[in-house]
Amino acid sequence: MTEILGHLWDGALFAVSAWNLLAILLGYFVGIIAGVIPGVMAVTAMVLILPYTFTLEPLFAISLLMGIYKGGAYAGSITATLFNIPGTPEAAATALDSYPMFMQGDQRRSLELALWASVIGGTISNLLLVFTAPPLAEVALRLGPAEIAALILFSLTAVITLLGDSRMDIWKGFISITLGLMLAIVGLDNMSASRRYVFGIADLDNGVPFVLTVIALLALSEVFIQAEKAGSFTLGAVRENVANIIPYTWRQRWLDLKICFKDLIRSSLVGSLLGALPGIGATTAAFVCYGEARRSAKKEARFGQGDPRGQR
Amino acid sequence: MNARSEMSIAGVLIGFCLLNYFYLIPTQVVAEGSSPIYPLLVNSMLLCFSLAYMAEGVRALRLEKSSGENGAVEQKTTDHTLWRPLAMLAATGAWVLTMEWLGFILSTFVFLLVASRIFGSKKLIAAFSLSLIMPFVIHFIFLGLNSVLPEGPVEELISTIIG
Image (cartoon, rainbow over all chains, first blue to last red; front, side, top):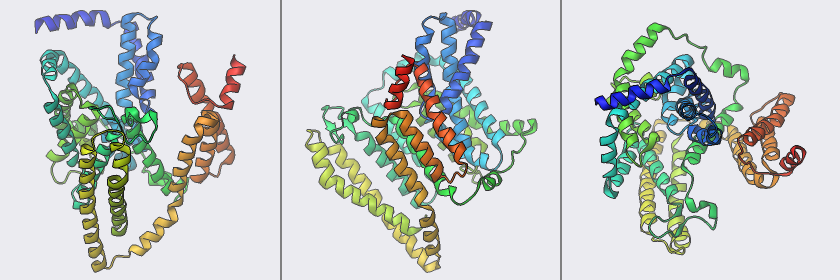
């Protein structure tokens, strides 16, 4: 433990300088732009900026890339809140409650809640991984096919908690899961490397790209929904339909923190654990945490209608 | 969504399952030398869930009829507003398919113009200007990042001018 703290202190002495902080700010700005655009995401921005970092100082370059990643991780929730189109797949869970909050006039509150959740959750997960990375890595290395299959089954069953209360919604949820499994069959078979459902198109050999599928399904469906609504009201009616911006006071911030604190800590811990396991990813972790928050909330909770705990 | 729409969707899903079982799996899976076990398993799951969905739809329809809901009015409203999303679907498909031949700039320009008309934009000059400027902005951003967008006559003209 003291060794880890010593290394952290040495790293901080090197990293905390004006240039590196500037690099983080610059990277954060680029990451925000990348994360806001659906489909681009932080990783894509990092890959595009990477060639330019070859000529930079190593610490400056690493700080820049870190800033891009952190900015992109949050920025997906901006379009999720304002347009119901998540910029990143994991922001789809944020959109479930942040968009209804936006429509009720709580734009400032929903954007700030998402920002604070990103900052606090990111800090907790960073600290957790610094101190628990070695044992977690050992556990992750011991996961075999059976354990990974169990994790995947766990991810699928976690979706059931989000399906709604009526029987119709539950059957629709099961059908959605099965259609997703069908979509994943497209491409080369893992065992025999033979083609399945490629229809002679060589580009489908690697399957349907996951990120593009999620963004396209969510973004395009929202476009079609807005197109259906477009004929029924004018721009003036749109402005009236979206309520006036409700001010967000410090007292409300404190109350929201008190309401969401337990869910925030739980989501940070669960997200850190699930993110460290292979084959899960941030998207699954986000939905599992949302489902857990919903499951543990009281019956009068307004999940899906603008509950602040839904954005954690 | 009313019960008839739910039942229609369930019917489409059941039809897809049957198509998959009798045509797609034999031609796209077995004929390619792959094992059909997993696709058959997933297809069977989908069929079961779709049948349950259909049964739930029938139950909901009976409830609607017994409570005397005016589903006809809702259907009429749905038909009236359906052309815009269908038009957007067609425009999006045409945009994706033509991008390979026309290039990103020209196809996106046409797509944005068509989309603005579908959404009912009355400011023609603003819509035209935005449709003209946006593809060029995106093209030059991608150019600056050394990334490639589908090329067409306009992109070739730009690269000839830039050199």
